[in-house]
Image (cartoon, rainbow, N blue to C red; front, side):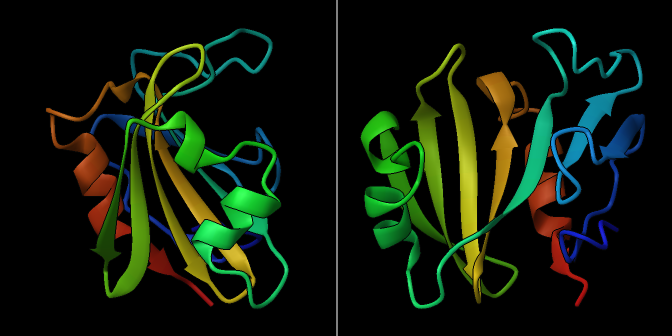
Length: 138
């Protein structure tokens, strides 16, 4: 559970969860055989962070007009999905140092971004396991 972020996620077997590395709303997930090291380029396989947004903005408006990076412009596909009863958008092939998949879900004035860095866990069910266990804790 990340109290500052207002969510909880089940940690997959054989994985660590570390909160507060990026900011207090963030959680980083790493396999036990990988070390979390913010001073290095690699700090985790899967990230969750909570972004405060102005009330009333939907996901599309936020990314197209206010976000530092417009995920609609830098992703190869955008798919509307349901994440445990919440409307979300799955951004695939998000360009960056390495391509990523990001699921963005808006709840009130928060957008939760759940990112599979380097798309490392698209076929081993770990990303889907984390997505399916995501719950609001408030």
